[in-house]
Amino acid sequence: MSEEKHYLYSPWRLDYILTEKDGSCFLCDHQNPEQDRDKLILYRSKHSFVIMNRYPYNNGHIMLCPYEHKCCLASLKDEVRQDLISMLAACEQAIKNVYQCDGINIGLNEGKAAGAGLDEHLHFHIVPRWFGDNSFMTVVASERVIPESFERSYDRISAELRSLLSERD
Image 1 (cartoon, rainbow, N blue to C red):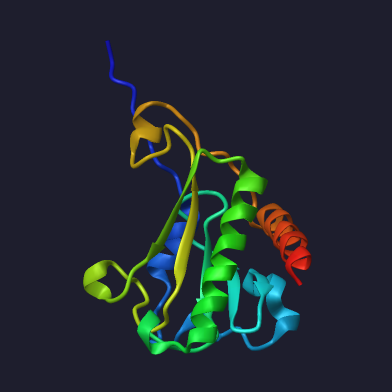
Image 2 (image 1 turned 135 degrees about the vertical axis):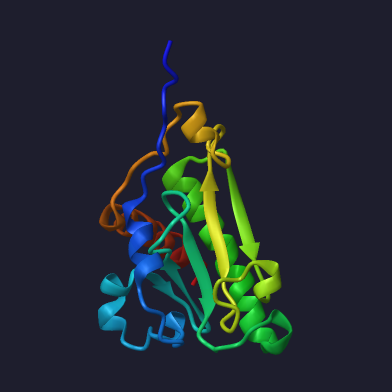
């Protein structure tokens, strides 16, 4: 009896691994709203923006970032922190509405020791989760992550955020 082998195939991650890092902050490269779709920016508020993770852990993995290039919450003005929390709640609701997920991970890693890949520009990760998708159990148990293109994710999440946040204004 031969053992069945399973492979985790994420070809888009190799681009990130092999890309030469120039030391610039990719989150600060958001100045032109006309490039939002190309840059995967889903929504802009007064003090922050929501961007899709180009190298996601799950479908619907998004990030919430202040415009200011700051490394920690304490360095932000109160109005920026308030905007971030308000936007974080909207992101949470949008992901639940779009993906009907079983749960959501919301994470903020401050500093390299805490796991921040980009520690100079504060950002929250919002990741939808489903039962059976945790760690490598999806591969071992032959479960599959729901596949969706960046374009479809972008259209669905940005429409939901606009809908939710237009009600707020």
